[in-house]
Image 1 (cartoon, rainbow, N blue to C red):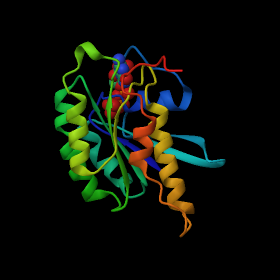
Image 2: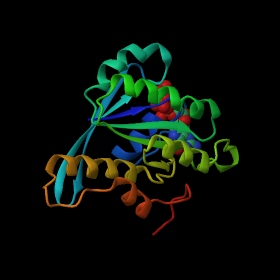
Image 3: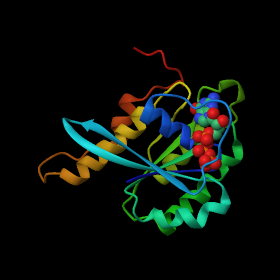
Image 4: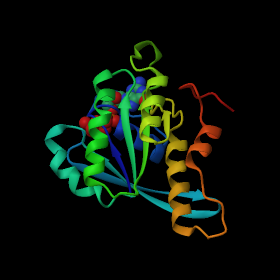
Length: 193
Ligand SMILES: Nc1nc2c(ncn2[C@@H]2O[C@H](COP(=O)(O)OP(=O)(O)OP(=O)(O)O)[C@@H](O)[C@H]2O)c(=O)[nH]1
């Protein structure tokens, strides 16, 4: 199981819909109530990995509902919105909650979403990178609108989980940081090959 976490309106539902259906939910913002999930099967080195992805409500009043699901998650995608400073400042509080409720070896990835909104940006990419480094978690900026890095975020998680499940003693360990660094698109844009 993979869980999406972060403040309300950072784009958790949109990132999931982009990954699942390849589309962008523009227009009216409809806050998630409680928790919702979608499945997607991805190919990892010719092996099918089924991701069950839980989309949680960012609003405070649903916190007690979502806490109950943390311990079943193998991976957590923690999102903030690059145009919303408080959503970035709250990441530390999210990480504290994660350490309190999630499994100790859970895979965590930090995502700065809405990278397409360059004109409204208030959180620098370096600040995201710095915070991620401090906590030792992989980081990338994503855009549910253009699709930038969305697929990569889930694929990196799927690869990591597959390696954990099938790791042979003599096999080199999968390095999620290196994989992401070699694959990621630096800008939010989409027109790469
Ligand atoms: N430009 C742009 N807008 C986005 C992006 N992702 C989400 N949005 C918009 O941001 C708003 C909130 O997106 P949601 O995905 O519903 O947010 P959420 O994090 O699921 O919110 P909660 O369900 O309350 O936790 C919507 O109006 C989206 O259209 C993005 O990458 N780029």
